[in-house]
Amino acid sequence: MSASSLRRSRRRERRAAVRTLQRPKLSEQLLQVWEHARRAFANFCEFFAPPVAIADHEYINVPEYRAMDSWLRSLELLTRRLILAAALAINVPLQPTGSREHKPRQRRRVLIWFNKPSSWIARLRMFPRKPPETPPLRRARREQPRVLPAFPLARRLEAVRRVLADPDTRAHRFAVKLARIAARNAKANQPASLAPARGTPNACSTAASASSAPAWRWSCR
Image (cartoon, rainbow, N blue to C red; front, side, top):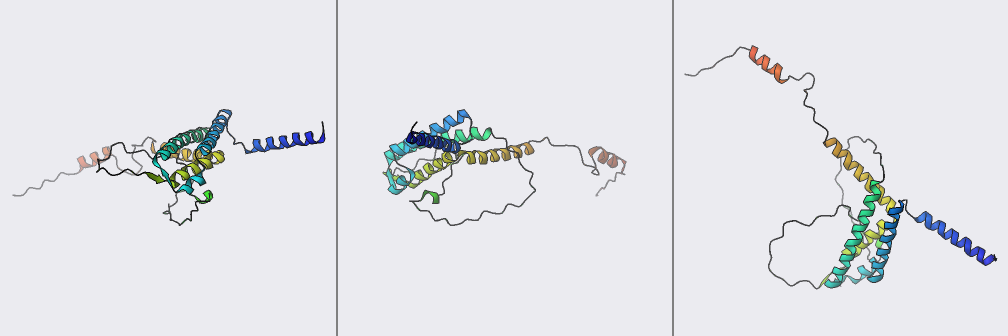
């Protein structure tokens, strides 16, 4: 083997080792789902545009927006199921915490640069809001918009990209949230104790004391 071919083989081994380190710590089945989701994200960016390019458009016509929204909804659903399956496979022991006061969240101003996705506030909702079941009242007909803002779509796509870039962190965070929900439900669903505490009169003692006390009758004429 020549020196150049030896260097190429070592370079391939180093690249394979780096790819192995970059792969998330998921099971084989979930790794296949993760690879499929990454390919779907790449196909979306190739067919339509990446998040930055979508945000640069500022407005998108309605037919193209609906096509992108349909693709993105399916990609979000696949990513949510991936994180949910990975979180359910993690056993998170919760540490007992004392009662602490919840301080109101303070709002802060955040500068958003459309050409810098790292400055965007983009989070994938694991429990998306459901649309209202009852149909709204019929309003007066008005002209349908021909274009829609592009930044909300770009922000949703960026949220999916962040989750697929580091699924381990998001899965562990969601596993902690599920463990806290399970702990609260277990505490709330505990059977209530109906036995009276020590030192408190029960129904029998109250009735006995009432029967032994002299009965007084007041009459008004």
